[in-house]
Each structure stands twice: as C-alpha cells, then as structure tokens.
Length: 117
Image: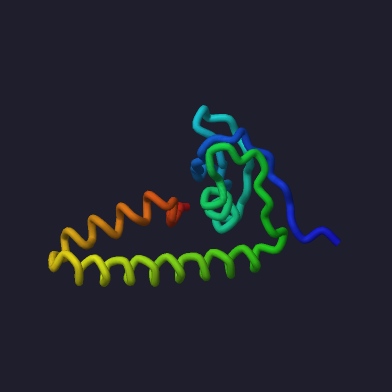
C-alpha cells in the first residue's frame, strides 16, 4: 500500500498562490507544478522544495502532513529561541542577536511558510 505521492518538479524554488479555492504551486518561471485545495499540502511542498530537487515525496494522508508541519514549526521555534539566547549571551545586544539568529536560520535553509487563503 503506497502511503506517499510523488510530485514532479522542475528543480527550482517553488511558490504558491491561492486562486478560486485552490493553492497553485509554481516554479520560478511560473510553470504550474501542483494544485491542491489543502493549504497544508501546499505549505509542505514549499518547505520540501530546494533547487536541484526534481521529485517531492509527500504523504497521502493530510493529517500526517499537518502533524509533520506542526512538529517542524515547533522545532523551528525552539531552534530560533536557542539561537537567540546564545547570540544574546555572546553579543549582549538583543537586536544583534535577532539579526544573527535570522541569518543562521536563513543560511541553513530553515524556512517557515504560511500561506494566505
């Protein structure tokens, strides 16, 4: 029994937009990759996508996707808080610590996607 679905991609970064009840996932050139009514599925695809990746494997069960997204967001929040705390202890400047934490998160590709719609 196959519990995942493979979505073919073009190997470039993806974005999504909400249009007439659907989330349309597109690549950088505007090529449509996938269409779904489920916001969680579109967010999951955006988080999975990376340049050079041509296939994205996603769970078929929407509840599994939601649980994964919740765990991922919790991990991101904890990681950001720890980075912020450590940077603040080193720099003694909250604004500098925020900048450093954001930079580290971006450099390592930790992103949080929240779609409207």
